Length: 205
Image (tube, rainbow, N blue to C red):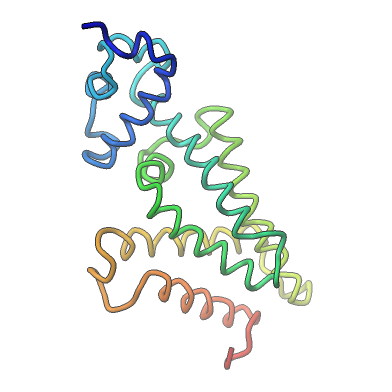
């Protein structure tokens, strides 16, 4: 019986889908190109028509993930409406939503060891996603006097790191399995504490 990969016309994406499944099951370093080929129902040599090896395949997963991530962040941001604060909080929550909905992509993007700068289109996709965070941080920071505003890139990086930490510690597995609070509650209260410390919010907000 002929291999499907020679005929279905989208071998590259079939390999991406196979790799997503394998990453979810075994982690980014736990599978081989031969396993991806087998799951995609193509010969062991077929993947090398599109990818030089596993690292390049994972980089493509990461690129696609950053494109999806940027789309979600842009939708959450919605040009700062109804307020910069609401938009900023929505962008933070979008992190959690993305990690839940696209775990394989998330791992490829942030946990595989693949540098976003390893390939031009990957770097562009990662930059597009980060720019939404930077824009949200910039718009919110305008509420502070210029002399008290934190550097916008640092501000965005703090929220990114905070969101990643909650995902790693509390958003894996069944909800509530690692503590009495939901990841969303942890994110909301954590962002609130951070913003109060910077003077964005009054103590009673």
